[in-house]
Image 1: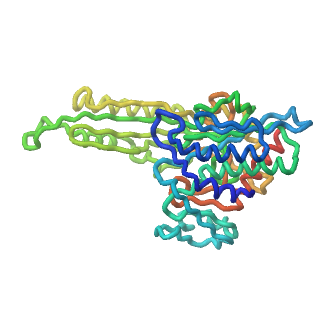
Image 2: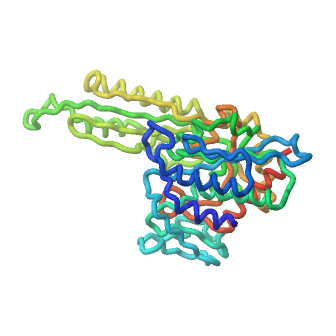
Image 3: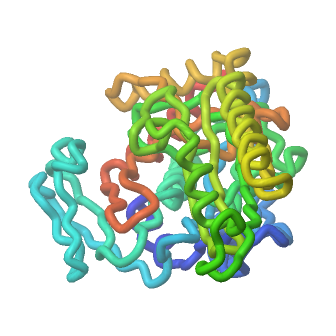
Length: 404
């Protein structure tokens, strides 16, 4: 089965996770793909195939004779799609021999254009795979699953010599839970790669440091006719808090190593209001400064309007995995060698976000991230190509071949 054929099966299985945090998986439907993969892995002849009570799927290939001394390399991809845009009833469009021009996404009125996606010219001649404009495609990260499964099938079918290979497919990556319950002892890898990136030649070993900030604002409501000197409008205080943050330090105005404050949602009345932010920075000290600024704003708001008006809660989410991987650059260099086998020049790109690999690296499993050749994830413009899916599988194979 080709990587494309697999991918088209996987994306039609609805696996969107949710923001609930009282269970893993956050949605039972994630098991639907887990069971499909369990059956497929067993049919391929993989060993120690297992789905646990949290929807994690494990599989293993023992080292072939003479390769027992090679390291056990792990490959990880996630089952779920984002919770805030539909992943149900996915209807992929296939455009064979794509000409590089605009692509109408079904009858949705949305159009995929080179103006917004300048890489489209590089996909000319490919079999382009898009959404119909009403859902995500699911290349994030079913492209990674398809690549890993196709690579394992080829390695087995061709009888190629290889060291031990560990595979795990995780739930709930999109809501930050994906690596938390991965059983490292069962997995058994010496090091691993998440196959969950964008461009095929990109290798990621740096992520943001990340924190979440939640504000609760208590106002004082009174009839507006007699409100002078008495009313505290919680919604206006919330707006004031946001205005006290640096206005250029937002996702839409930053790039590369530049951090940001991202207001993800807000609600409010005169009496009470809430603000929710994510804080991001590649430098731990810079993230600490962002948290310090928020604490200062909390202090100043309470001095102005009265103690208890604003209450700030800060929570660490993940740390920059470069702290760990900078001491294990040989596995980054191994990935770069593998990229070159595809005829591409590797580039090291910091992730403006996080991956399961960040948490896993801090849990003791060094884990950079590899590209899948998918683009515009987390929305209706998501797309990939049959050729990119196949190349992602060959990238996994190359790492197995090169690992010594």
